[in-house]
Image (cartoon, rainbow, N blue to C red; front, side, top):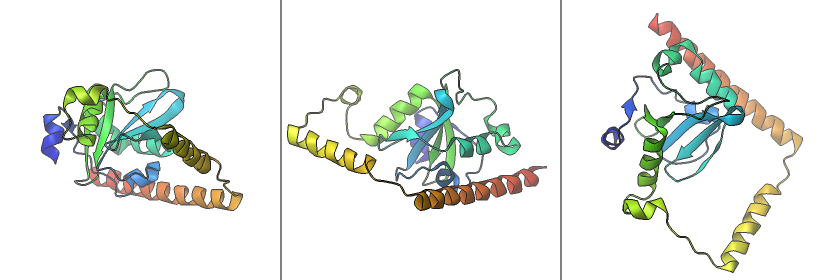
Length: 182
């Protein structure tokens, strides 16, 4: 609920969320809350309430954040750059389709609390995880299997075309919103 986000100290944005926003960035997770920001090496990163994180489509992020319609809403926040880490993260509530902005530490705490709603704060700060050797070997095998999958050129081309199509949808949505404001 928005109340939890607001209680955590985040600022709501009156920026409509494009229906294809997370898809255009390449986010494939299922978490309700996902935060986005720019970091070193010209990459857009995400963290979600499932405690997943990684990089996404930087071109789609730039298409969105640099559009004049969106810049009006984001200009007073620092989502990071090639030279400096992000001070703010853009949070998407995928259920209510609302954007919020919060400082990095606030956002990390919020996402951590969403991942472990019944845990005490002290336990979330440094939980110990113990796994058996068999569990470790099984995990390593799964990682090797995923990383070892060969991506054939035709599949790569198909994925690229899908990404271009969804970015074109985002561009069209932004242009429509931009025309409506002026």
